[in-house]
Image (cartoon, rainbow, N blue to C red; front, side):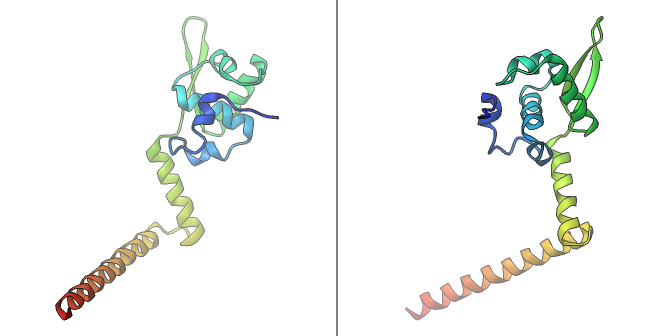
Amino acid sequence: MYHSHPAAERAWSSDLFPQEVLRLYRREREIAMIVYDRGLVTAKDVEAALCHSLSNAAVRSMLDRLVRKEILTQVRCGSRGAFVYGPALTQSAAAENALKQFAGDFYGGSLDSVAEAIAQMFANEKRHSAAALETQSEYRLAS
């Protein structure tokens, strides 16, 4: 049976990780969550943090795949040229991606239509709240 890394496990229900990370396959998700949890890491750092051991080559391969998917960033550092990996998605970028996905799913990709729908929802909510307050006031006066 698969058991995830303790740092990854505590964040399964967290809002800290972008949806793109949460949608990854199990092992990729575990690796991405380690990187997002720790900030900047090397392949050796990830290898040491994994619950079940993977070879360094396998870890590097998955890290490279996550870079190609634009989940992680990769920078060469130091005199030996070791790669350091970090999160590629910020909370604001993840929110923007989610909003675009929502617009695509429900509003034909139009962010203007989403904004109009939200404005209409607020207007309806205000009218509903005002009507409820008026009804409460009339009830109190009648009592």
